[in-house]
Image (cartoon, rainbow, N blue to C red; front, side):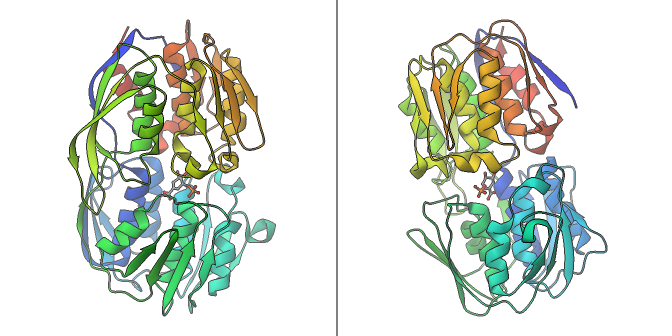
Length: 430
Ligand code: S3P
């Protein structure tokens, strides 16, 4: 239940690294566990969410070495090498673990119960349990299988061609992972492109994955083989630093080794559009996961306009972007973002509440926010609502607010960026 006290800075300056990508770290453990042989992961995100994934696979008999470090070895046992867990699988705050794991559990010939913390037990799971039931899994839980704790009994899956009503990498991934256990081709078609880390990683491990526009398919029963891979820095964690530096003229910060997967880098385009100077160096293009060093220079910002077509590719960066909108000169709009209501907290409500408290003019709509920028923020007490990204976004707001800003309930930062405050301190010029 820690608190953070934030003081305004003159500017941000220096070179830093952010921790490993959360989405890729989860997938490396999961797919590594289902592969045959050893998988070695460098740059693993050693933070609560991903450790929950590690623990879940250890509970299903997978040997994983290097816990507590950024270098993991996963001793995969093949597609049918998991064993029935002896206890309930508690995945804490991690929605990615729960949804993707449900996809994998759907393929197992055993029963498991999966649960999470207070926040995760309120988040909708029907989006994955419905298609997984269609494939043949037996799933039950509160609210007709929509909420955890969920009991799942898998096995004997049949492939489906699923048209997903929302763009969601978690839904897409759960179905593709279940598709590994179904004979023939399983496909998912999304209304807009979401992050494609599962597709990339499955291919790397030897699965047959085909991508045709918004349709992705996988052929069942592949032989997956253990790999060595490096996880790039998380662009979503980097976004807090990029926004902080970008909105304070005179700042210049380089973040090294950041993932620039095309399905994740919308934030770079958005920041450039509103006036932040961004340059990439050391670009390492590869099919697995491209990365680069990103240099950000602060500027006076223009207003932001985001709509549903891009939202899925900037979904985790909206809390940071909303803070930038408060200092931009003019009226910013974020639309088509109702998914933010079912994240670790209702992020539209939390942003409107907190930014208003800090003196910004924010209108909360059903699926977005209108922010009248250019107002001076004044430090006060704001809450994280138990959401790591809300906590970090509010800390960033505190850097440009007058006086001291207190962010309460900030232990949640450990889910994705445990050294966030140390990193910020290293580049702060007071
Ligand atoms: C994630 C997908 C996104 C994102 C989450 C991580 C993933 O969720 O918000 O932080 O790793 O697949 P949705 O796919 O539910 O939008």
